[in-house]
Every structure is written in C-alpha cells, then in structure tokens.
Length: 117
Image (cartoon, rainbow, N blue to C red; front, top):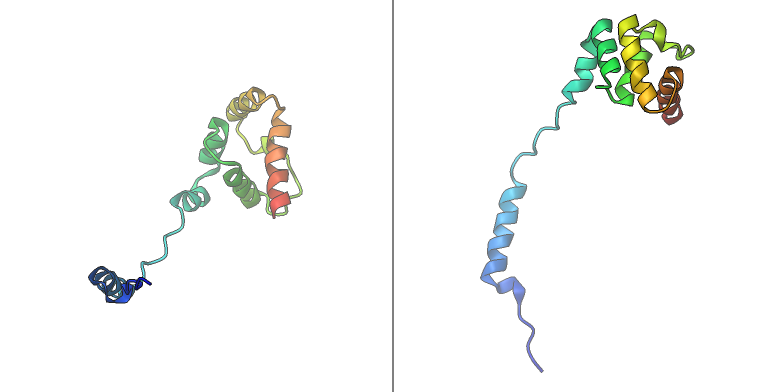
C-alpha cells in the first residue's frame, strides 16, 4: 500500500495558508457608490430630460423614473404633453422605427415598469 501524501506539511500549502490569513486581515473594501447616472437623472431639467428621451439616450427604467417624478400618481400616461413639440417629433420617429405608435412606445415602457413594481 502506498502512503498518501500529507498536504498539510507541504511548503506550498503552508505558503498559501499564510497568504490567505494575511488577506483576511485586511479591511473590507467600501461599498460601491450608487451609479452617477441615476443621481444625474434626478437633477436634470425637464428640457434636458425630454431631449434625452427624444434622442433615445435613456433606458426604459430611467424614462419611467422621470415619468414617476413628474407624475407620481402614475394615472396619466400622456407623456407627449410633457415633451416639447420638436422633441416629440424626434421621439415619435424613434417609435416609428420600432414599428410602434409613440403612445404605444411610451405606454409599453410604463406598463413594463408598473408590472415589475
């Protein structure tokens, strides 16, 4: 019968064990800061937000955060009243490129958000 190697006595295991003990003594890294975009979204003016919506630069979650901010009761889905007319046209063409009407485009985003919350 062959004798099993004793790994606890191995110099490599001793080195790794001591390195592990050193690493556990270091202070924990601070928690990551919240994403800057979310904070910036809350600080943007209505004109800046509507421009970003029209350019398609915002995620659906960011758009719905903005809609919640301007309409916290979530009852009205008529976002086009918020958008400036020239920005509405840009956002409408973006919706058309997705083969949806503008209202369907915005309502889909809002309904998706409300379903998740």
